[in-house]
Amino acid sequence: MTAEAGTIMRNFRRRMWIAAIIVAALQTAVLGYMVGERAWGLRNGVEVLLKTAPIDPRDLLRGDYVTLNYDISRVPVSTLIDGTPTDSRKNQILSVRLKKQDDDYWGIIESSFGTLEPKPDTVVLKTLPFDYFSYGDSAPSPQATIPVTYGIERYYVPEGAGRTIEDARNHDRVAIAARVSADGEAHIRSLLLDGKSVYEEPLY
Image 1 (cartoon, rainbow, N blue to C red):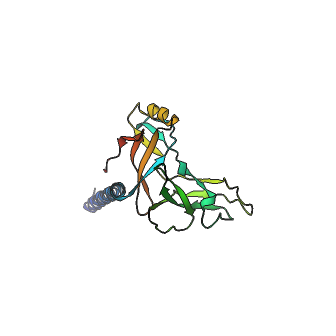
Image 2 (image 1 turned 120 degrees about the vertical axis):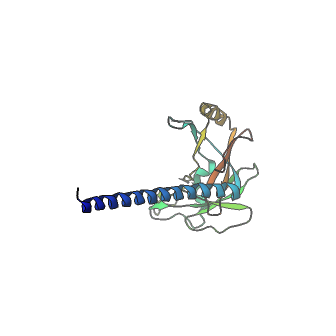
Image 3 (image 1 turned 90 degrees about the horizontal axis):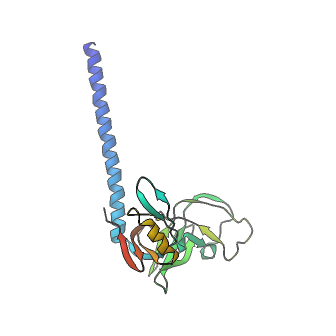
């Protein structure tokens, strides 16, 4: 190998090392941001109590988890303040206003494909993007709903505990305490059984 070729090879290896360091730093920064954002939401978000209907599937990599469905997972079209769109749309986000009900659970009082301004004693929760299929010119029935998700539909529990939680669900004994941040993102804070917290999420 000539001196020139050796220099080129060393420069190439140096650039590869620099690129690897930059990529690793970016990955660390992104991960740090995600962890910090979650911690901020858990620490400063408004706490809401949600009624759930979990199912117990199995994740062989991480142990037991429960898949959670909520009363608020189906948004009544009657709560849409701007009416139902007449055309189908992709990657829609629905803003859902929740208010504490007489039973201490938080329920939907209004929703919109646009922006919902803050109001006292309420929180605005944003759904994950979804495809909306229009009713066209036909008016939907008063009981029609829009199925949505919020990113809090899976909760990991210690291995072997999932079945117990599912059994408790069947007797309406499970609830989720979640924190909703100012930008409408929800984070699970704890899982409650018979009104008592049995699993809590750490900040980090």
